[in-house]
Length: 477
Ligand code: HEM
Image 1 (cartoon, helix red, strand yellow):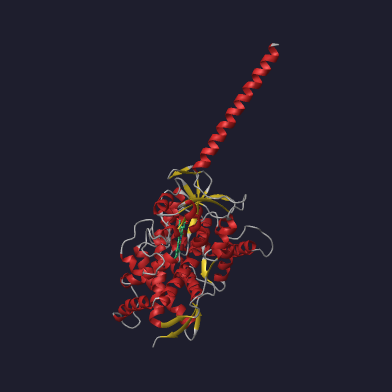
Image 2 (cartoon, rainbow, N blue to C red):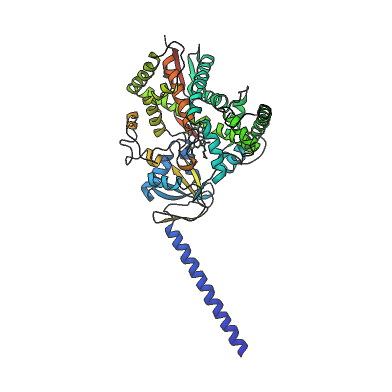
């Protein structure tokens, strides 16, 4: 009898405990469900990935994907992309909250193919102290003295490029031209590595696989990219070891390693601060970061100038005034660059409307509480430039091209073509010099016009003009 009683008490206790746990779990789940930002998760794994990619390919991510969801759910909404629940945030406050809290509540989150191809030792994979160490090595080459030394080198590169590829031509692909020039500038002026034949093509093969599915089979984008990455690795290891030997034999004093980034990185290797692998991975990453972005920014500035002749006249006058005060053949200096105010406004306004990088993914490393919502640990978060660049809340008549709007200071975290917070673009100053010097030499040496004024922009995954932006050119008399 006692045994039967004990058993029924046990069963009842088990039942009560089970129901209590079930209720608590249900409550917790419904609470967190209630608190995640509103949105639609779509089908398992796929979620809304197809809609996202479709809109991205047409360069209509804002119009076809983000804007309709902002209208439906608000500026912070949930979706499901590439296998991960993702919260998309829009607006200056959200940008600030997310970007300035890098390493504390979020870390940058790149697809597996990018990490494998850029290398796990590249700055994009680094956090905290290691990130800081690499940034300061890259940053010293871009401090004021470094930039001043870069100006004449970059002028030479641009002039050589125009002499070699533009002279005697009637048509030229502006985007491709800017791409190969940016490549030489990053390698020869910034890193201090000679560009060899076919190097650009090999790097481009790596870049083509950076956002491809990381599937290895003969002929796949990713396999081709991995093969190209191995070729680059072999080439860079040889360059790094040769340079290291030279530097060890010459034993430069501290601070005398030369202005070029490669020398600075190798000096870091000699001092034991970084490894050879870190040097190689970061050279690949820097090329990737600089390449399509700067050339797209240049292409869009020219596109906008061709559509706005009044702006072009103002810009041209700025450059004519600069050369008027120079002797024949005299090089540009940093002071001349500082006079290119309007040109920089044109470039910024073009990047506002056509950001080379529309935003980037982060991963929540803890449950994040923001504006009454919970973004659960492990979820992805995407910040976008669109949320501010295209919003009348921050820019009057946001879809019109008006470079002079940059005469006024723009509040923080509103204009973000170069990102923000600890991961603010490390090459911002280099990109600026590259754009301004290129524009200077082109507009003072050539008359030009677009061959396809209505050429569309495609994204795969970075934006580019579908036909490479061919222009008709004739030398100025
Ligand atoms: C117009 C040209 C460029 C644009 C629009 C651009 C944009 C950006 C953006 C938006 C980020 C932040 C990404 C994020 O938050 O996840 C970034 C990071 C970065 N950029 Fe640029 N970039 C440009 C040119 C360059 C150049 C020329 C270099 C160097 C040669 C460079 C090197 C880097 C590096 C190293 C990072 C990573 C910084 C870190 O993780 O700490 N970028 N860039």
